Image (cartoon, rainbow, N blue to C red; front, top):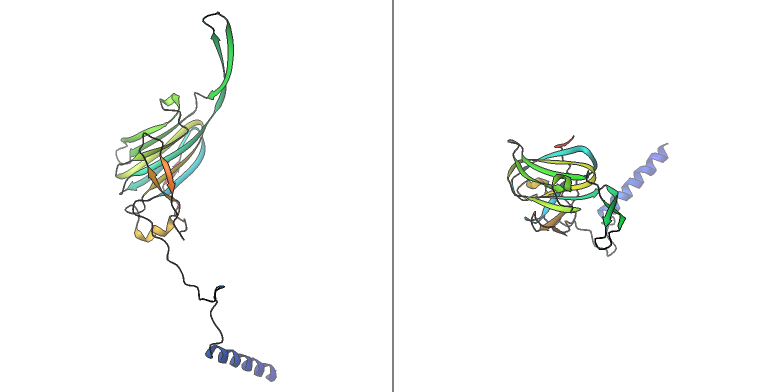
Length: 220
């Protein structure tokens, strides 16, 4: 037993001597240089990042989301997949008087999707738009809406006979504390306005880890 303890003491002494002599070095990369941590690229002041994303099938149901906007604009981008139906239409040739039935596919008149943005305090409608002739909207399958109003906003998503994917984008700067900038990685520049189909230009935020999830979401 004494010999075993003596061996351990000798081994420990050898390790300490090697460390003191500089024989033990920190890990290095393939080039032989000690790795140096690189700083994460800051998020530009005018870039917008995703704070809410939801894909759902709507059947006279909806989801609401609240956000206190201090640095506009907010962009709400949606893409919809409406229900298709087969339409049989009887047409008459005016010259010959003959009739025939034409069969084609069309969007169901019961398919619609609506985005409503309200002042959360007064419930006044700030913006309302969407998809579907049943609601008086266009049949654009993908659109981006722009919200310029400051303050506490309530975003309502509703629909029927339709599947919709919706993402809300805001500027991190001015809307969140600087300490939270590293939480955003899904970011891009948006160009255009609410009356046009907006083109997205992705940008890379190096080293960021997306960890922020909205806590103010309500399903209806």
